[in-house]
Image 1 (cartoon, rainbow, N blue to C red):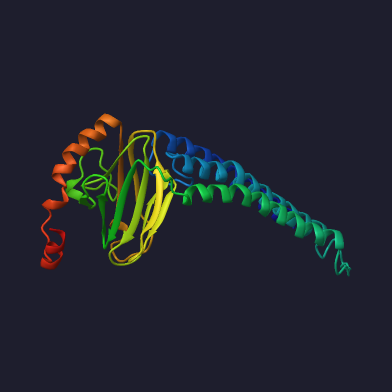
Image 2: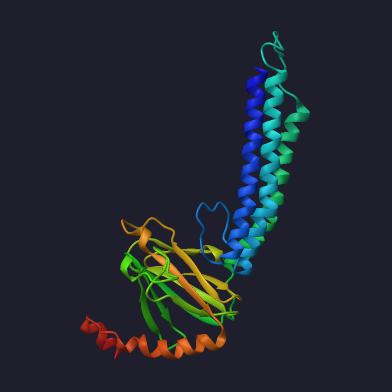
Length: 289
C-alpha cells in the first residue's frame, strides 16, 4: 500500500514540476515571437495590448497560484485520508456524521476565494467591453464562409477581402493557415474600434495576442477594440465552428508605424476603393449611385 502511495505522490510531483517548466519555457518563447503561436504552446501568446496584459497577469500571477495551491492542498488531503483512514489503520470506522466547524470553513473559504477572483475579473471584463468613445480608427470585419472582409468607414469606405494563402503562394516569412493575401492594417498606438458581423452563419473574430474574441452574428453588429503599441505582424483565426472550412479563416493584422501606415493607406485607398467594385444587383447599384 505504501509503495503504491509513494509512486502516486512521485508521479504527481513530477507532473507539477514538468508543467511548471513548460509553463515558463512557453512564456519565454512567446516573448521572442510576438503575435505568433508556437508548437506545443500551453500558455497565452505574449501580450500586445493593455487588455491582454491584464488577462495574462490575471491568469499567470493570480489564478494559477490559487489553482496550484488548491490542487496541492486537495492532493495532500487525499493522501492523508488514504493513509490515516484506510481499513487497515481503522478496522472500526468513525461514526461521525458532521462537524460544524469544518462545514462552515468549507463554505466560507470558497466564497472568499470566489469574491477575490471576481473583483479583478469584473474590472478586466469592463475594460474589454467598454469601447473608447474617442477611437482613432474604425474597422468593420464581416465574416463569410469562409474568409473575412474588411471595411474602413473612416477612409472613404474602402473594402477588401482577406483570404488565406494557398500552399503554392507561401513565400519566405509566410505561415501556413495563418498568412492571408490582404491583411488588416492598422497604425501603432491607435485605438482601433472593430465592428464585427457575419453574412451567413456565426463566426468569431479572435486575435490571441490582442486579448480580443468577438462573435460575428448575422444581422447583428458587435463591437470590440484594441490598441497595439508595438509594430509587427499578429495572427488569429475564426474561433467559432462555422463549417467545413472553419480552419481556413485566418486573421492577419499588420501594425505599422505612422509613416508606413500613411503610405499604405494612400496606396490602399486607390487599390481598394469601394467605387471600383462591380455591383451585380442593379437595384443596389442604383441606390448607391
